[in-house]
Image 1: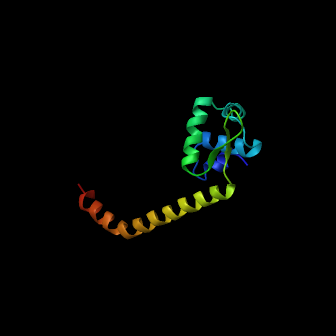
Image 2: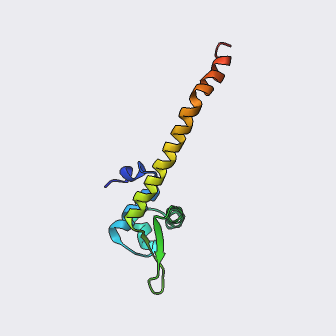
Image 3: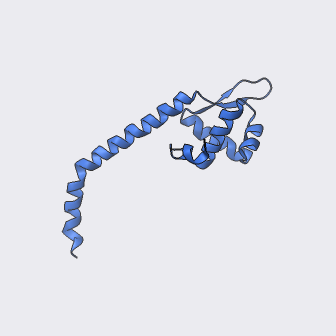
Length: 111
């Protein structure tokens, strides 16, 4: 799997890097994860937060320091399915509006 494949599913490049790295190495400290993903540690915390908001990343107890890891990959599938559902809804709304939008545009197109 490549970062660009994951990006096509709706993640940023850094989210994809962190996600794939975490998937490969399992629960680790943020310092280790950031280093392996080749992302600045501060940026990695921010990226982990955005992945967490998408339900794709979390923190687990690991003794002295918290460990970070991706959630079950099925949740990523569910996330993409939800994005598709929303896109389908937007497309349906556009189909209902396109004739009206074209009509409004044609009023001024000749000016």
